[in-house]
Length: 474
Image 1 (tube, rainbow, N blue to C red):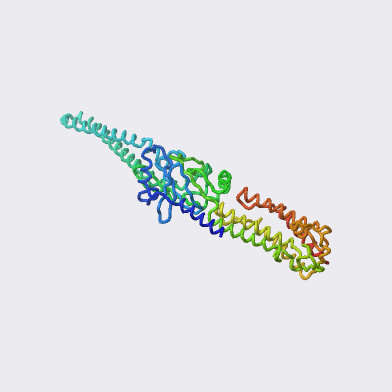
Image 2: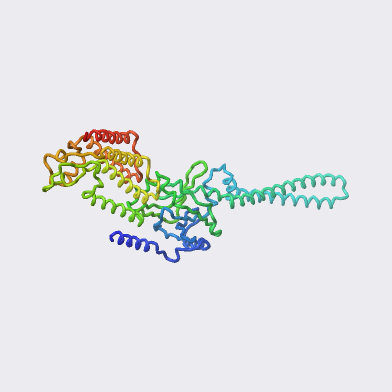
């Protein structure tokens, strides 16, 4: 019942958070118009990130108001709107690139200036040619003058043709540069990376090339999917450590990564924030199942054989007013306890990491080896213990404690001859490594990687336990 109430509360909270004003949701056809309406008083002379939001099911776009946090998921598609993207590339790219050269030809007006000079030169040569032709008509009877004018006309005609060819070439170059800038920048738009909380996520690149949504304001749309956000482990870990425990939050911006690896940061018109709640209803249900199983396990452990070595039977039990040491037919199993500890720690860590990072690849080799060592130890211990009898009175401490926990602790560390050092060693190493493991998960948001030496030390401890267990009861 408590889990159901918690689930309904979380669902209700999610529902309230998901309600959006109608003017914040629009189709792609009206997205440019909506952005322009919000930018009537904004200065868009310089390239900036003007709008941010989430792409909803059905292709709708949800715009996020300025200084507002978007509540997203690891699978969410988000978008940004940038103005003057073609000009931005002209500023960001290295001067020797083809795009930068073409952009300089246009934006610096060098191409148009050269074109104007070529046109003036052609017009000047045309005027000269017309004047020479007029003078030739006036002096048609003077043979000497005509010869000189014919030579001058030939030179002027060649100069006119050169000027005309130069003007035509420059016109072609300028038009070609305009077409290159108009269409050639799209592949470059894939070099943008999403920047959250001051950290550039190199894996968060656009899912497609930039798309123009408004030609008047030169607005371009870029889409990103957050599924790869946790693959940039360093940036993700820094962001998680600087965020609240229950939610990853950071300011949204863009980084442009050039072909040479140089990073340039794009200005933001207004403050936009992205938030990814780390503990959604899926986490609470999963963790509730684990806690429920752990509670049932702890509740049944004292009265069942789930943690007891059923291969060993305790004999010589006192039936009259039995204390803890004469209530059970089988002793507690240290190997089963170790396997249980690592099982609940690893499955709890997996759910925690899945919720905080969105990744299902949280289990690493260390977790597998720990599960293998504890499971193998329990299996061999069960095989060795098969059909053995221990004298209960020999195991009973000289001074029986009134505390069930104390008796339980002594039982775990005792063989048929009483408490042993090899059991204490294995128990101590299990607890120490368990604390280190849990601390690593909570601090680094990843299952820690134990060194081969540390894992070998645990394996040796378990091996010594198995070796002494063979001797126990013989």
